[in-house]
Length: 66
Length: 247
Image (cartoon, chains in turn yellow, orange):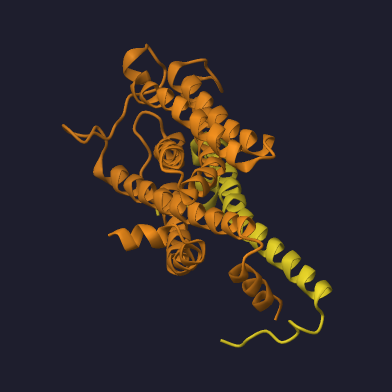
């Protein structure tokens, strides 16, 4: 590691606030970017499954096991 | 060869293949991202002129590079869907837009934060920065235009045209630091001639660029999968998937 201590790593000779905030904001955006499609897909499948259940409660009660 | 193209047009096949690629590519990418972030933040030496603020480069440059590359993917997919009416190309084009917008946003925000300690200002209306801002608006424009139409076929056409027209912006972004007097520094990594960056900084930077490419690919595949499901909501394979999901 380049820095001697945690406080040195946090302050980065006065540039810490800039560097850490840039990394934090980017990481936040990336996390949202990766999570969005998964959530969208799960919500869609859940909604579709709910519709199926309402339409034909008896027919699709037992899904096929693969 | 032709059977490959035929399969490429098949939504359930594409959905499944994308899923099996993501199963290993996504975890590998996320680990690589964590490694790259820690490497750039804590394990590289500071720049002799800019000090520690230069560490932002490990996000700023990869995000900007892939934001530009993503635009090629979007515009080419748009062209393919316009010319050959390939539905999957339309799906790919739509999937690119939010990823490109997020990466361009990251490039602009990190650049702005980097600018404050280095240039003494958060923002300048400089050629490179302004053309990147236009890139952000192009990406957001494609997202918004798609949502603005009820007829998705017309929406796809309009977005494809917009992304092709927007291609004009790409060489401007590349060349902006050479054509105009700019605060932004020119490229340090060159394919021809010697790079003006030390190997100890180059390796983590290349690592992050590759990681961002992989991340773009993952997000593209995930967005395409979600989009495919919604478009194919009435088909049997999606219904079956929903039934399995319920179990």
